[in-house]
Image 1 (cartoon, one colour):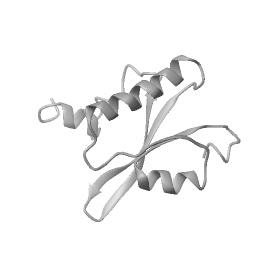
Image 2 (image 1 turned 30 degrees about the horizontal axis):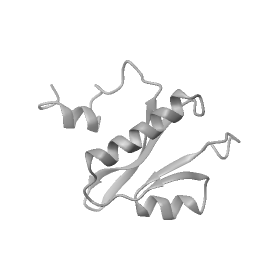
Image 3 (image 1 turned 90 degrees about the vertical axis):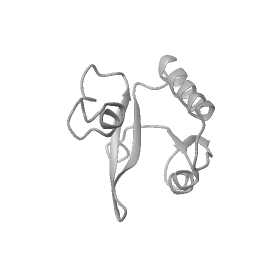
Image 4 (image 1 turned 180 degrees about the horizontal axis):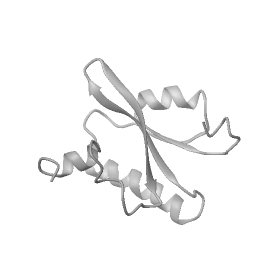
Length: 106
């Protein structure tokens, strides 16, 4: 959608499949090849890089694009704005991060 609107963007990919797919189509500025069990150190390196880019003013927003698990045979594309932070949004019903970090959605 951004490309169709003429909005420039840079992409950072995580994992081999995303890198292979997106590097043929968009400007991938950095790639992280991580295995099936990413470590806290790998996550920290990615977060530090993205945060530094945002805080330096090189990016005005950071969005996470991923496939949301629905079932073994289905998934759906999802986009989550990570920066700038929003005071609301994670507590909405059905939000996977809220569900994973709370007991029974409470």
